[in-house]
Length: 212
Image (cartoon, rainbow, N blue to C red; front, side, top):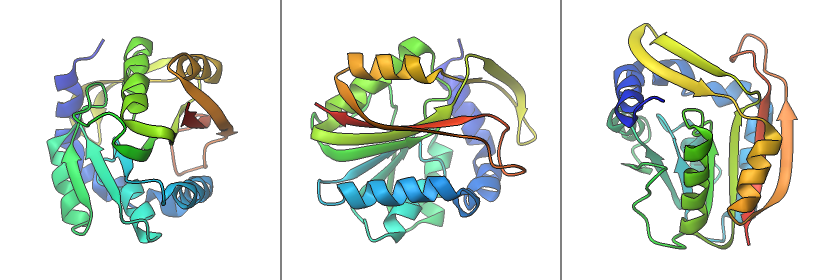
């Protein structure tokens, strides 16, 4: 199992290149834009939106551009947060660990996490889901995405930097069982094929949950 420091190191090393490669990725991801837009519309009146694993802030900026300005972008990598602030000076960003969030119970109206769970084991994922549940207000909603499967992809290089990082794929049924055991109910599940020549060739899932 990779350490927290390995994950932070990976994204600290690659923050600038990651932003260059992926900050505008939503331009080519039709379904992602639709889901983020609808989720923002449904939740904008419920309180601040928490964006987990925001990287350089592409999803945060997309929601902000829709007129939903009460949003906080968070990432475990200080270099990613620095880059997010540079690219999005009007939006608030800060470092946070999804496994141990520094926020109060029931602080946020909703949360999003696009591919923020990809470095978690199943046990860590359960911890993360419990943390998100804790910081959401009653009936708060959570939209997140991940790669579908049961494999672990290990990389020794990422964006031409030497790293040691694992990417975990998850079966949808397992995710649903974990989420419901943590107290969420499922609002929707959407699966799609990868966009050719745009992203890694894996099937994707988007899970929309609500705190009950």
